[in-house]
Image (cartoon, rainbow, N blue to C red):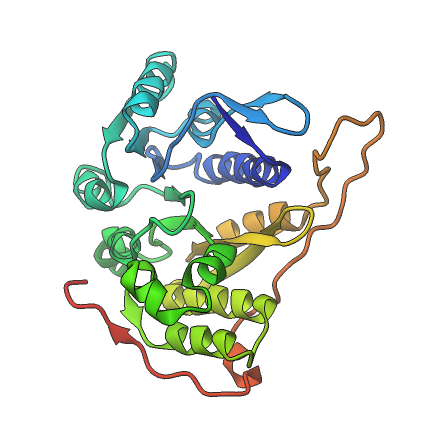
Length: 312
């Protein structure tokens, strides 16, 4: 069992509505694929109210029409066992597997056995900055060659947690300490490159920009990287606690229908479950500006070119 704040419940609400919309939109296709890079706990509790709610794996296994292939990636042996029990209780998904171990290692191998022509949705929801850019590239490349040869075909859709607060917190104000602790290298693996994010980090250390601007710049840089993979539509949804932005959920798709569905569920007013109340009013949630292109023009400095990591 794991306890979560209202922001996680909000994220799962959006996720639930989107995956249901995804399978309905893809119901005319005989195969539908779901990938969960950090499948996590099967028993989840909302801290503020004590309510139990399903995790992403349970939600994905429960949509109708069902996904035909499901891959759940998880490192924790305890959670792996729980996910396997969850799969045993699900009879609708024909091809469902739990993949124990590091998702960054296992996802490329798992993709080899999945149909390239099937509509595919990947949920990349780490606790922090654990997802490697090489993994994102593997997902984007999975259907690329096939999609180019087929009209109206698309790459793997992704919804990715990008930890903006984690970027600011982990890099911090002490450059030498962050480098020595390996945190700068972790960020380089997250982006798959050095360069622009280092200049943003420098600007934050020297007070050229504030925390909020740094967080937004880090998120937009990540969207730039996704755009470089050829994704046509990108959406950024900031997720807040009662005080600050915690992370941004970045959605990437080639399909206009997927874009419209996600845009609709992200913009929907939602009840934020902070405590038990008799009457709860839906609240508007903050949105990042779209499109994000051109954001560099507003910076008081120029950003360097990307220096790609070798081996990607």
